[in-house]
Image 1 (cartoon, rainbow, N blue to C red):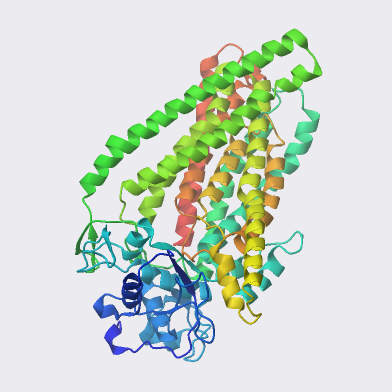
Image 2 (cartoon, rainbow, N blue to C red):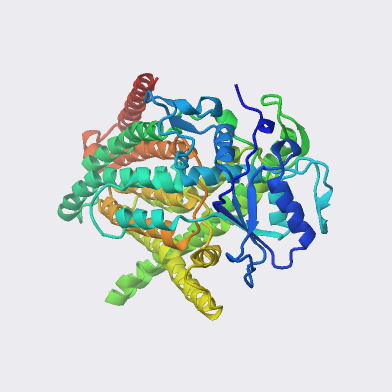
Length: 618
């Protein structure tokens, strides 16, 4: 039986800061008082029932420039009740995994009334984030002190504060000692070993740990392709037609690795307890707005928005915009082919070393333009998806990922399909694939790791100078830590990381049979990506909030879709090869039927394997 909130006093004598709230410098006092009261107020009164204190010296004095920074924590009892609310799954004394409930707390392994480590710090911060994001207006018509910041019943208070510039940010604090230990075993020494996924999960949460787990798995899965690709590239470099065996292996590889990953993923998430988390605990996303109503499933008050209005926004605005962007992408692709023809004509006229280098210039320019277009489109897709007003974060992410994947797929791979199946130019296909893959990897490494790291180093130097100028004592390390972290960049999630792996998987699985070194460059990139991503998580970005998850979500479907396209593409390439065409010199119809038959056999085998795998997991 679920305990009543009114039965508990969640006062905590020892305050432990977990989350930092930064308000704007000119925030009015009445706004501060109202917000802190809402955070501290009882749940029955619409509050979060958390602990909040302004950032101050040990003697109670304020620090210049930090008057609008607040620290949020919670009592141990409050966190346990919150763990039940969000549906955390923990290990029991009988080694089974069950949803935590406060009434049966003593049946869970390592639980004790005085053991404050029963919940990890990331789980505690996730609980606080959940409560802050679910602070919603009830009777208020506006934010006190800001008449222009309108409120209505059901509106997220945190969301309104953010959109009006009153709340600058809120973020979880790093645990300096735990972070130091994690850095030491994770990336401080360059070594060939498995990543400490359990430790990553405890510190950053399941979403981040699953990404690094998938990155590690995908890198190991690429090794056979790379080992086969090196000799294949060396001994068949100039013979563009000898790719049938490699394409056949590519066809099987791209389908098998994703099925194996699903089993690996299930084992990890069961061990972490997220495989069994119930989906009904997903609350409306903070950005969701509507008229306050009653959820017919949970019986809770929450905003309600017409699904018809949402569908009209999707089909009358978002869909036409995406189609327009796809047309623009194809138009840019045709300009690229015009540039290729100009470079080829110039080389045929001059035939010098310089003209030979000029052959690669159009592909490099096109690769840079692709990256720029992808990033601009990403901002537009985020705006449109937010405007569509999806109720759940999972639905919001699914629609955003669909928009971005469709555009990125066409933008990155349309030229390769055109070269392979319209121009039938395998030499140009190899050159374009190599240029696009290597250029995109270099640009991503610079944009995601090197440039942010350089900016963060500059930020840290400025902050340290400011600390020295204020003559702060060494025992005020918490203030230094908060000032350092609030200036760090915000980690926006694993979206871009998975997208990079998705495109890399496409380059390798679709056309690597004509450029076998694609897997080699992918492995090298992923090794450096592992260290650069670990570096940016620990030193460049603020600590992200933990997000429990049971799998890689819609990205699994995205990779499987790419795998299906890979089967069709490789079968078509095999059918186009001179070796296979020699078997059917006269009847092209028989050749097409054989290729289609092979595709059907592969798909049926794959579906049977999935059915057997599903039966085993059940």
